[in-house]
Image (cartoon, rainbow, N blue to C red):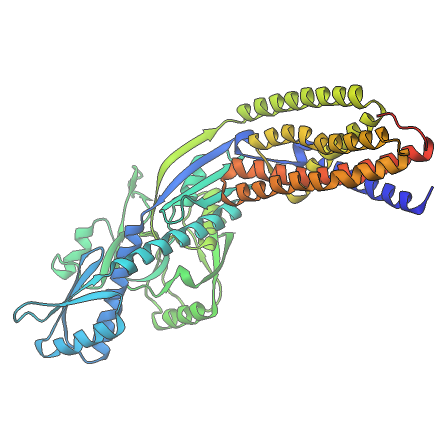
Length: 521
């Protein structure tokens, strides 16, 4: 036996052994898609108007600061709509204010007030508004993907619906607690540390008594998470008066993880990046003895007293259960959403449907393979054994590669496996027919086999490459189940090329060694 045959045998055995090792047992090694393992299917809509309105409010604050820095007297300011704000300045400064607006805020259309009114109305341009909306969707997509990845879901689907829409498709196989996932995805996770100016109090009115019942400029009132009442009956909400401008925000967050507080209760410990840590150290050093509120999504989690300058890690307590603390740490690590999201569609797929689909798919594959095997053995006789072996090895390689790559098997993927049974023997049929033609011309067995493989090669390549191109496009532009079908077909095509052109040729070489002058075909 030549070294060439030995090397080929070793390679085939190595591929088969690796594939069997990776794919066995299939129930544990292969990831099943949403339609097979069960899970949830969500369609989310990003409220892009909120993101645009928030950017307009930020631009108003920045523009006002710019005017003050340039010596312009600002009389009043207000947000007129989600895309427009108005600034009133001293009459003598109106011209300077217009020049600054046109120089630094080119994304806005600037309009002077009529008559003697020294007002400046700035409207967001349509193009810039559309760009802000698109950025909000892309940022939301990345944030949701980060949260899903941290949640530990195998082979999730998180993608934008359409090229310019504000909807996001989320498919999570194997998830059996949809409410927890929905809460994690919808939480904005906007973390801020704000200085306390008043409180706690049991009502908003009590906080405003010291200010004549009017909320001071630059202040806001936020509730603390409900606390047990002093009488022990139910729970009561208390309020704090806070400075709107945050001392530090969650954008400065570096890490967040599950921890415990001094009482051993669940908490979240965090560290800040160098810039945030420097700011936090300065703020706490300048406000020793005052309260600093930890605010998450417009609710106060705690308002501890600053006892000393804080330069190291911090902790967020008063959270609830361990699971709630884990979820909070998860969303903080993934970043804040730029706008809230709304659930447009929710579907749950039960695992019982998946088991039934798998059982029917396996039955269909077994029947199809049995019919193909019977045909090949009857029609091609001894050479049919060659095709049957190549077919079996092809299925093993497909499952092994899918397991090794972590690819997801979906219901269309099972249909792809059944389709591959026919496609895998198609190449063998082309080769066998060419060999028959050569034998009919009176050529020897060896030369007929060589000519059969050589003449069938172009037809095999054409058929498989065109199918492979179609599978690539399906994977690129399809959604979850369609991608599963494309992955299965792609792996199957490559495997069938290996088995039909390499493994079948090797088996014929072994046949010639035993019976050089005879071929059962």
